[in-house]
Length: 358
Length: 127
Image 1 (cartoon, each protein chain N blue to C red):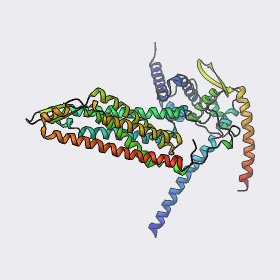
Image 2 (cartoon, each protein chain N blue to C red; image 1 turned 135 degrees about the vertical axis):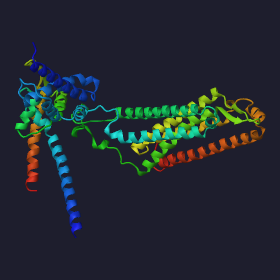
Image 3 (cartoon, each protein chain N blue to C red; image 1 turned 90 degrees about the vertical axis):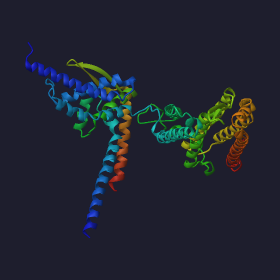
Image 4 (cartoon, rainbow over the protein chains, first blue to last red; image 1 turned 30 degrees about the vertical axis):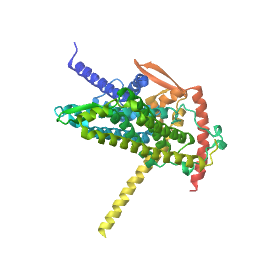
């Protein structure tokens, strides 16, 4: 018949085991599933070795004694960190600071851009009897855009990390030794003309991010305009052919996304290469061409949109037509001017000034 | 004058603490560079983790358990050690010992250390 002492001993043994399991769990949850079981088995053995080393092997330690052993073993997070010290990293120490900066910019631009774009949209203010719907829509748009931006940036940096040379202590990567490199293959010193200021790279990131938001969020809203008719009723007029405009949105979005990747690349390396200059020129020209066709493509405007506008708001029709034409023309001129400066700068600084031979 | 002396005293106290922090970090870095050599030197005979810690401690090499155990695992994975589970008193215990590769690496490391030691001693003895 088990006596009180036996019961107490059993309870203590159970508490000890629970505490040990808690410690092992606290370490294991920070480890990769591939190695967790093996390391947990090791740790269990080490803990019992330490207990036997401190106290007599045929007695059960108290909880306090066990805690002392665990304290000497070390903080579970520190233990896990040391087991993880060799990597591999999704995004390693060399890239992590740049990554944090780019993620912050991407999230800020996307969230602020969505909020401003939505608040400026007339549709947001016209649903008088249903104010919750646009707010819920706004939040869900902000959330989904933030998630997309975060995912895109993380994927980009993970790809860069994968292809970078990260060697840590006792790493399996091939160590750079005295014998396996040739001084004559050293890269030339960087030319100051190719240097990219950090502030310029960040500005590029922000403006490109805003551009992507405009194209993907605001441009589709041009699919219709909502106005108050002459009798006071709210009217929604479809303006653009949604099928035809989607192609342009896709192309512009793709070009701007490529420019965003390039801006991130420039932020990290902070210098122009011939290849990156050529890519930037190609993207700028591509953007201009798509924009030109977009602005001059009459099939994207629904037939008779002007007639319908004249029917509902004759006072606004002429103003709308002239305003839209002038606005689009001005936008195109400004973008062309900026692109021309950028392309000219690349050609001069990257090729003429450095006497680059193709 | 008293308040100026107190401020100087506070600055000195801060400096001492900062210096101590710097020293602690540098001592740690110094030791870290020799850990592998110390560990390999004791594994000609099979040992388990805790026994190795006690062994090193007897030779005035203090190493934290959360440093040694991951290190043993890494050395094992690199092929410098071989390990096996042995059941003693109905409890399994992993024993580590030098592999053939580990033995060669240890000899090379020891040689390098002795040479470095000589050079460093010559450098610092007259400093």
